[in-house]
Image (tube, rainbow, N blue to C red; front, side, top):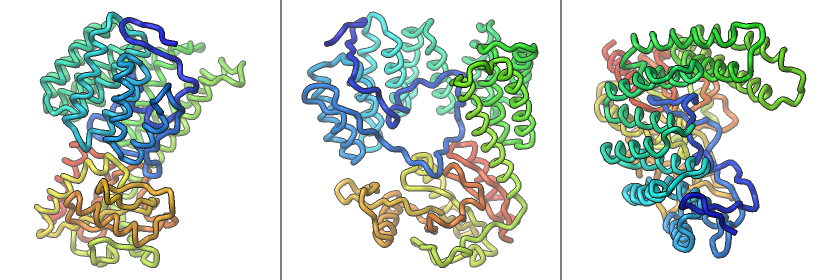
Length: 492
């Protein structure tokens, strides 16, 4: 049943893994968009888990994931630990253990770090790693880096992984994590040094595009001049790849990965330039696809076409957000007949004229939203008596309050409105939030007026009711922008 690869065992499950927690297990390729300053979640898509079949014997993967979904962390831990005790090197169990590490970070962060460290040692001790094992190793490393508060220990693990995966296609992903570790700890100089060394050692133009993407996304705030230089060099390389009449698939894929990421980044700072970039990408894709259109079922071409459509929607949304600035804010009071309120008296923005209002679009299931709570609490404490009002804007998501875990939990049965409102109040109290919420009907288009497609989204409205700033996602750069604008608007 089992076969040995290095020192780790592997078996082929009866069914392929489906989507769900698997997003935790995939390594981040160097060319993927890496948000080091802003993290947002789809406003209409909460994270869902899967219902995979059993792995083998007494261990039921279905029961394990069910325990995770129901936030029965100790029960899930007992299941995976029992299975690993019998087969400690089973790669699929180690894969599930990554999910266990992620699920336990909130309730037992130190335990999550220890669990990840134990698993990392198994991979480090292995004589060699197959591609699948290297992928799970990288996922475990990512969880360790997220959970650990000890930057030195994290860096030590990352350096070990750099050596272990040297020559592997995943090695640049380790460099990505090293860079992010430096950035999280305010060490932009060290992050830049890592990336500068990577650029110096890279002769391949296509690989350079991947590095340039990471460079610009990681260091734009700290080193704008150097970032512009790297970006300009990368643009020339990208354009050269698609300059000929016939473009190879490899060249186009490298070009497209860079150009798509660049347009997405520009959409947040300069939507007009992003639109021009999008049109250029579309023109190059037209030329490329016309010479590769013999196969109507070409999955690669279809995937690129879908990505272009998604990018187009992203750019159009960012343009819409940019157009909001300088115009009167849509009033949630316009939907008063369907609105509900938690811990607030104001029934409309009109009631708050003369105040600076921060509208925070969020949801109870949104991790990046919760990550902004410390800033919201800080701003309320510092500025509420000076004229700042924070209003959390959310919807009904059929969540109830789990009295056993003292957490919000999605319900299979229909949750009455009064129960979900009570859940929101308890949720608010559990995070010690001081601001109130407006809860709009799922059918109402209040969020649509602000082009809310990703959350958290913050909208700052001045004392006259005019939108002055829109930011999407958590992260220190967004927090800094909002904080500075709050002070500016209060002083007006």
